[in-house]
Image (cartoon, rainbow, N blue to C red; front, side, top):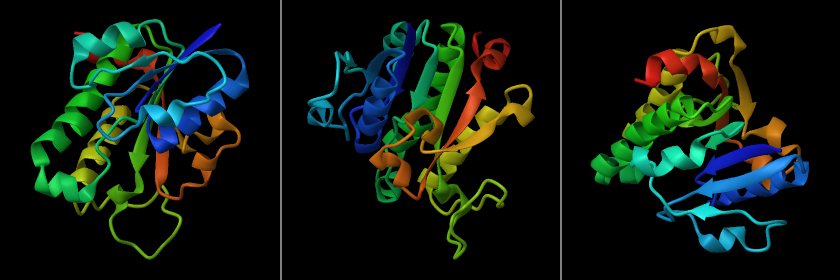
Length: 201
């Protein structure tokens, strides 16, 4: 049976992803969420037991045991706010950059097979063209946008860049969910095994 881990799984989109993964019926799902912006109530009524690990992705030691042995990690945890990234830049940077690095490093060290990173269209700046696609040139206009873009750059360090594929709101994993209709939520699929030499040090 597969093991799925969703960081930020108590958020609006994360909880929808949890329900979508449970509906697949081929594995168990665990959630990492410090409940800074997520809500325990978002997981009420899920179909099946879903352990909620109330830990912070800024703590490698706390998240590493949860990620260990997972088939797929969906990394949605973030402080998803442009205003907060300006008014409170330190926690925003720590969660969105340092926390993301911790997730990738722990996934590599823990033998995780795949990692899906939730990026943001804010990395492409203010453009009248919709939908925004990865072929556009990045033009971050806020600390939050720059932070999410940095996560994409870490992803590109993985070998075999051509194997990475864009997934819209983890759409392939969710099949059908309210979250898939969100127009500004993107993800990048990473063959996490390629990170081990880079991150597991």
